[in-house]
Image (cartoon, rainbow, N blue to C red; front, side):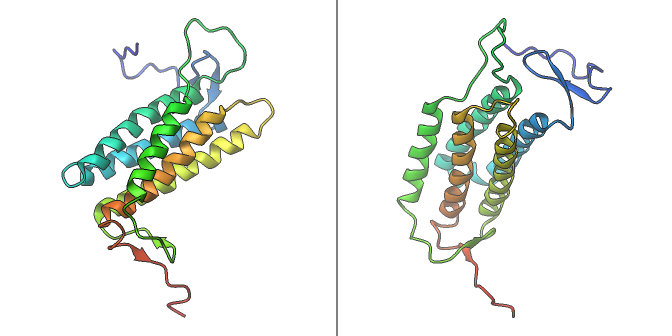
Length: 193
């Protein structure tokens, strides 16, 4: 159970922050950057939901579930499985969360026309906001992959699958809120030469 009585603790004033393992790391550490970018993607989804809440309640509900899962992902990344015995069971992303996202992607994608070009971020305000969230989630994924490549660091396979599916979902959702792709802005190679 999370309990936040005091917002500032002064423990980070020296440029470090605590992990769930009680280890302290520099705020510039790659692991901190990874879960900080997951948090940033979550905030972008929150901004996108301003545009989906009224006109796209089904997608908005899917986004709400993703936001909650992204906090789970942040907790997963903040508590690396280093074999150390903890006083609590750390929260981990599980396969059922990935499967739910895949079902949601498939449900939205079933109504979309096949693409014949890359899509430029834009169209409706909701689509543009979802594209922004997508690019931030891709950055989070790149940081997680970089972190996992370090021999001394651990990132769960399901966590990586989940963040990969998030950006896939955000792409499909952006097309769905663009009148199922009818308002997509398509890339025209070399158009302005």
